[in-house]
Image (cartoon, rainbow, N blue to C red):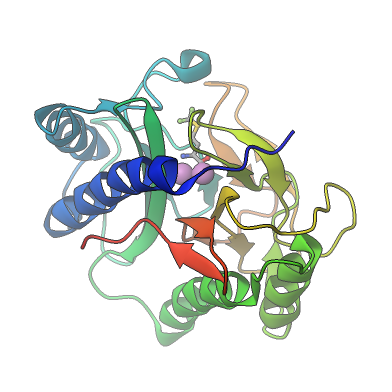
Length: 252
Ligand code: MF3
Ligand code: CO
Ligand code: CO
């Protein structure tokens, strides 16, 4: 069952989303060459607590940290560590989810560390564009699967691929709730969009035609591309409004 949230509830979710976005913006100047990802975790953790919220990942299904930091061939769920140090040319997705007054907000973006090649810069830019193209497709009465098609059609032009094993999710009173949001075309999990739905759009894009992934047997969390190609991701939480999707994870 997909929860339809009323205007008051969406206003509450938006407060959580705004805090998550503010936390991500706050971290940006610390995402630099030589930085370790444990430091990013601590900064985010403290920022969230100082704003009377809780980091949702911490202890979620035994996840050990407060944020996810996914570098280069890591698709998602990278675990911060003081032994992981950002180096010139890396790409890193930082994913923040907060719980504020019982409501969840979830956002992420991919940063480039120092100087990267034009090829890598384009890859990251196109991943962000893919997310926005997906969001712009969303209208009440349309099918969610059309969004997946929009994203897939765009990125496959560049010989990239859309990760299939992970998707977006309904969110609000829970971290992950229906619907499951596919960023490639499939009628599985399809739903007709309606005002009051709240979910994330968070395409994970691999910089090769191979969408397959593999999860670390070492930590049980870190998801890698099978072929070790780069993977990038951007994420917003949106609410379905009368005319389209309202992005909730903005700093204003
Ligand atoms: N924030 C991630 C998402 O976008 C989920 C992370 S789950 C965790 O859905 F346990 F790894 F934190
Ligand atoms: Co999410
Ligand atoms: Co997230």
